[in-house]
Image (cartoon, rainbow, N blue to C red; front, side, top):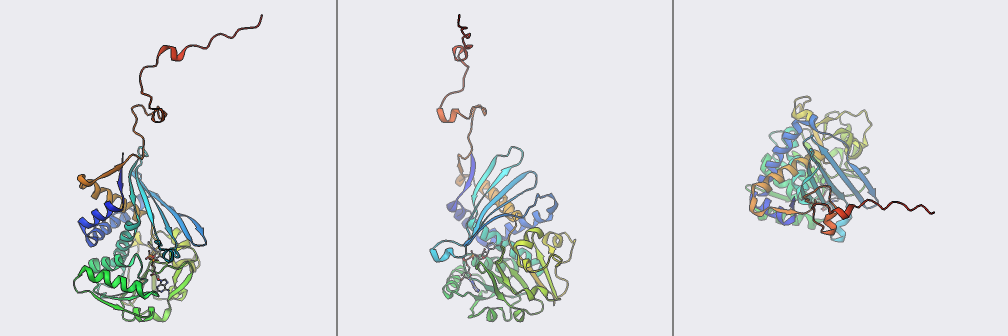
Length: 364
Ligand code: NAD
């Protein structure tokens, strides 16, 4: 049997722990896994593009466990009443190849992306950061606000979305949580939202080279958490922001980010730092209070591996509500897979079941 985490299980797990504590716990798992970066088998994700979006497969392994995520990104979906991003994934045992867990990853992706954003900001943003602009107030946005509130002590959020109803929804959802000290300001443009912000998170969905942030909006010392630009031809930052001499760009896995991140707009010689290098002191994070840091987030398979392992731990800790599914056959005789279809029992072979063939009669 394979452990199963569906949407109801996810509601129960996060309900028990609380979303803020869940994301903090997950960020610790992600950080621990990034610290052993060299142990992971890494590859850029496999993407199939269509006019409306992209479907991606994201595998990785540390030699003991293997994971993959199926994820899509279809910015036009919300107009049809569907999510822009959905996902599910598997955690498997490398020794036997057997899947251990099949899990929903739509909610989990929002939690892990926000956990990763806050983790990166912990290392890159100015420690005295107090105000965050959140541009793009769709499905991912509450998760980002909660993670930055809980993990970085951000209290003031300046919100903007081209769809005012999305901002209203975000404000309602956050206000209902009663987070201490929370101050929310709805802004009528991205420029207004960014004004006075220490951290700017861009979370928009648009399958084009959008220009959500322009160079004139960027102030010295800002940290930009660029999340929505995550596939070829889908970016959020004006390329001149990347060209600034005071900018340091940090990515997850460089070969993937070169194709999918904001840096797809830059030549191959453009210098970037991988997040694992910052964590292990192989490269500096922020080098001065005035530096502009950019976390060019596209989402990497390791973060989903961490999330699946974290979920499995939480699931196993709570034995009563565990669910399993019969995804893989359980057999008395693993060579008798066919018996699953016929219901035939394994047992001794009857002698007349294997009589030698009669000798051929040779015509006289
Ligand atoms: P969503 O469709 O629910 O929300 C996107 C919001 O952006 C919408 O409310 C839309 O009105 C708004 N928007 C679009 N263009 C805008 C603009 N120019 N200015 C302001 N607002 C604008 O999508 P979501 O699930 O919240 O995902 C947001 C983005 O994050 C997507 O592009 C998705 O692919 C990306 N994403 C990245 C990661 C990662 O790891 N980097 C993970 C998950 C999602």
